[in-house]
Image (spheres, protein in one colour):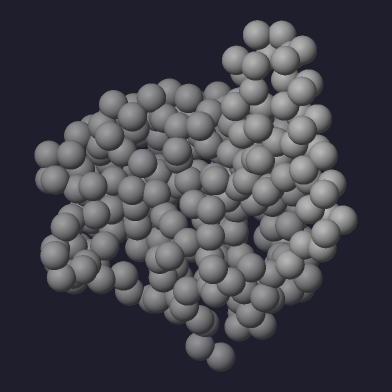
Length: 277
Ligand SMILES: [Zn+2]
């Protein structure tokens, strides 16, 4: 309960505001509701950045990984497109094509590339693509030398992403995938730091073929995982050679009624099984 003195103070303040309002110019009065709303937003800590961060809300619990991602009962055909090593000079065009085919995707970004193309990353966020981390070094000897080195590499990338977009993303893809470098203690360390690690079950080999053959290779693998009742999670690269041929892959997925999506924090992340000791 508010005491008498407090009550009196509020009454006094209200009277003061009512009296003073007469002297407030009309233009200011017109925008007064907006000013009140802005001060509410500032005082309650609600901001557009929080809104975006909520998209990645893990509710303090990181979902358990799965080694095989199954379709749900409704049998809606879904696939997850993921692009590593970006952003690059091709990102905008890749995003343009994805938009054209109503496709969402996840981009696992490298720290130094984010610094080179910050506006591209902001556009990724604006256009509602999922942003994930791929570290800063991409040097497997350095990166996997200890649990600490992996975690620090991802935290550095997370901070860069945060500075550029205002977004703290928990998603990571460790360079070359989690097998065989991410031992059990490494996996535990990244989870303890709030990271959600993702691998894939369809490797496009775009980096190897660098031409139309990667599309052929990808479709072959999609059919295989589909036969096993699995949801395809595609590994692609944010590169010019991928951009050159990706449209035929998007066309295939569209014609085969796939919903192309980005990952989210409520999902059980698909990971490679742990290396048997
Ligand atoms: Zn990579």
